[in-house]
Length: 127
Image (cartoon, rainbow, N blue to C red; front, side):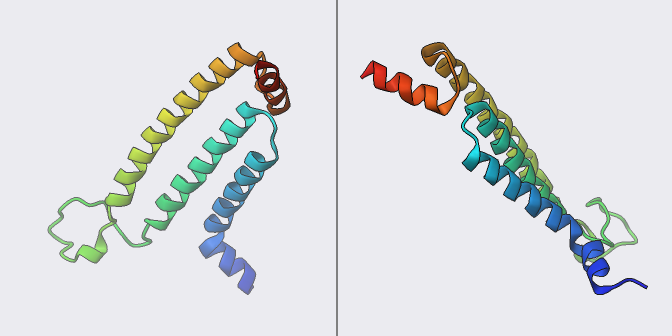
């Protein structure tokens, strides 16, 4: 027999894992002093949000949104809108990662480091 905790984890465990991923990414952004690590944590956070939306959009008894003669009710289909929006979010995530990497390259060229303390010290020298 399944206990209540096992039943909860079986039905909602994926949401706990997504929340854990999000919390770890936020923690990494706050604690890390290296800008590359912050960018990686930002990407993990974006993946957690995308994963949450895709999990939230799933239906246990749903089928793909293709017109079938035997299925006549809209409630029997999986809504394709969240999946399409998350494809767009993935593209935006790749774009922001590219811009972030370009900025990190420029920061490395100017200050010689991507560590937060070194950049703050380098900025004091330029003033």
